[in-house]
Structures are given as C-alpha cells and as structure tokens.
Length: 174
Image 1 (cartoon, rainbow, N blue to C red):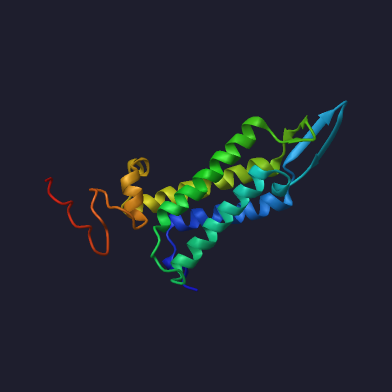
Image 2 (spheres, rainbow, N blue to C red):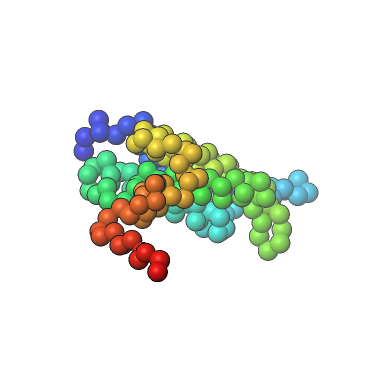
C-alpha cells in the first residue's frame, strides 16, 4: 500500500473513523454519580444517535480508503456524500452531547467514550469538508438544490438536461 497517495484530509477522515471505531466500542459512553457512588457503562450501540453516527463515520473512512486505493470508481460525487454522512453524524453526536444519554428515563452523565467519539466525528467531518473543497466544491453549493441535482446526474445547474435526448419544445399555440 502506497501511503503517499493519502492526503491530510484523507487521514483526518480515516483517523476519525478509527477513533470512532475504538472509542465507540471500547470506552463507556454514560456514567452516573449518586450518593458518592460512580458507575459507567454503555457504548455507541446503546443509543440510536450513537450507533448511526458510528456507522456513518466508519463508512466514510472505508469509502475514503477505497477511493484512494482506486478500488471505488468516481461515478458518484463522493466528496458531497462524505460531507453529508459525516455532517449528519456530527449533528447527531452534538445532539447526544447536549441532551446527554439516558436509559429507562434516567438522565446519565457523559462518559469519556462519548466525548472522544464526538471529537473523532468532528475530525472526520473536518476532513470531509477539506476533501470537498479540495475537489473544487464550495460549501455554498450544498445549499443549492440545482447544483446538488447536477452532482448526482440530475438537472444541471442552469436548468438543462445532463444527458440523453432533450425533450422537444412544446408545440406553438394555435
């Protein structure tokens, strides 16, 4: 494997995925402290926002490795997909940090695994954004539905058709 093919933005996505893999499974995400007693438990798979974020970030890391190694074709707009996946994971993790984990209606504190997994997610998102801008994208383009459609093979940004035969003009009025 030629590591010189990997750029900084690729390493950020891969590192974020590796961090999420380890911290999402091995470290505790929730803790409770009452009456001088402290306990911690849980991992990414105990909360929907956790396991879905875990899946998105690790998937982004796998896609990044496959793209750099040339095992994945560029028929899809991967930079946009990676920004979307890691961005959604970051929002879910941020929401989990703000609201805190809970189990059976009991609010729990945030464990070290949750914090480190959130940081890993944010690192992967930063790498995805860097990759998107390095590919010539502009973050403002993500708010334009026409440009997004054009990136996925739909209508192009100026309203024309991107492929195949064009529709004939309407008949003249009688």
